[in-house]
Image: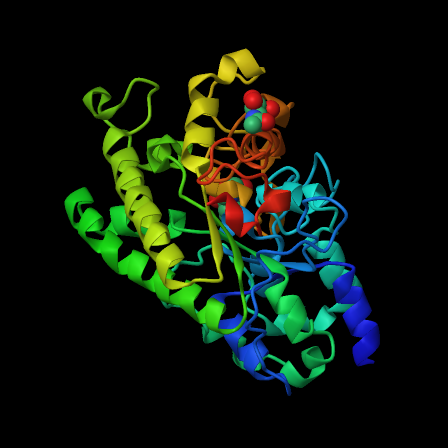
Length: 375
Ligand SMILES: *[C@@H]1O[C@H](CO)[C@@H](O)[C@H](O)[C@H]1NC(C)=O
Ligand SMILES: *[C@@H]1O[C@H](CO)[C@@H](O)[C@H](O)[C@H]1NC(C)=O
């Protein structure tokens, strides 16, 4: 059973866990010997590509491919309408950036993997979830985990080392902060969030993780959601119409994130950490939306029939009748799908601009993210 599972995983698995869940799963293994020799300086393939054995993704709803939907409530149609043609657990009409990452690395999509091989994970693991934050609210969901059942489906310790660890987070931490405190106080809370981020990376490193692909956080003040709930006064907007103070908060977060990554590079000698500038990709897209075929860069596509954006992520029942959210006719014309998450068209544009490395530090394409010598 184990060797079958190993082959399956070696063919490349995409798993989503919270840090806490990952640790619990990892520690439940009989052999927890974290491979200590660096994977990062050698190549398995014929070319320079890293031949990752797996992707472990940690993040919030921007990379959730079904954790929230499985655990709490199913996302209703028209989520999924463009690509999967059914709700796929993703808050989007189609693929997420994590899906384009999987495609680029020739790996299966997460949900396909979960559906085929790991039904138990649906209940047991703490996926990247809508609402996940870096700060510890984590770990709570894992209590019902059927660790023994999952154990036989886990990668070998070697595969943990030869995996790509993608991290996409911060947005929920920051939006929680801005909705509960002043921007000034939110700014002051950043160092705490960064400390948690850092200790999560260190924990993963101790478990054998070596290659990290870390997304910074996007321009928070450009999320249409904020315009619906708290209409900003015009003086609060920047040149493209986003809320300046929220974007400055995201920039402050990103600057501390980048500094911490640079520090971690000197501390975790065998790790390779790529800082991925999602912020610039997303902001550039909003700024130049019209030249890329998008209309109304701060509009959004999926909403409840009265226009409430919260209608897109939950089914509503009115007098006993289920009412699905409604979608615009052409999601590919919009950047934002549901006022918080992007459409597939926007996710593809952003992926095209980050996966070749041109916005990142260092400028390596994702397929070569394990190469240490580039630093
Ligand atoms: C639901 O039922 C109540 C009572 O019959 C009625 O007053 C109300 O208008 C209904 N709401 C909708 C949205 O149909
Ligand atoms: C990366 O892709 C973007 C979008 O296609 C392109 O504009 C840019 O020139 C590419 N950069 C490199 C280094 O290939």
